[in-house]
Length: 101
Figure 1 (cartoon, rainbow, N blue to C red):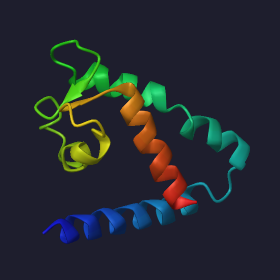
Figure 2 (cartoon, one colour; figure 1 turned 180 degrees about the vertical axis):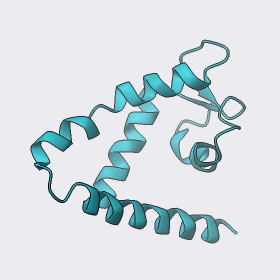
Figure 3 (cartoon, rainbow, N blue to C red; figure 1 turned 60 degrees about the horizontal axis):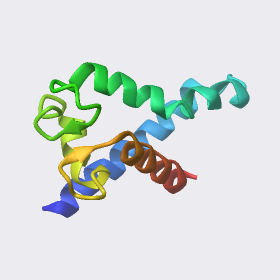
Figure 4 (tube, rainbow, N blue to C red; figure 1 turned 180 degrees about the horizontal axis):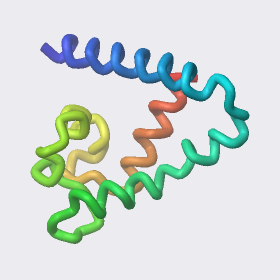
């Protein structure tokens, strides 16, 4: 069953990559990269949207309403403490960027 989820995630990543290539085809890559590299602001946005207990971390319960984040929660929560910290979030994004390049 995990293979099906991994397969769906892989297909989603490939489709998103292709779509972003089409969308940004005419853009200067140097203008696009700064937006991609601002992962801490992405985490701040997630915390603002989902962090109900104001702990500055995200739990599985807090992310339950977001199917995509719920599916990858275990992969992002590297230390297994059932909370996603900003550090774990940034590490996950870095690993995703490396796997795409």
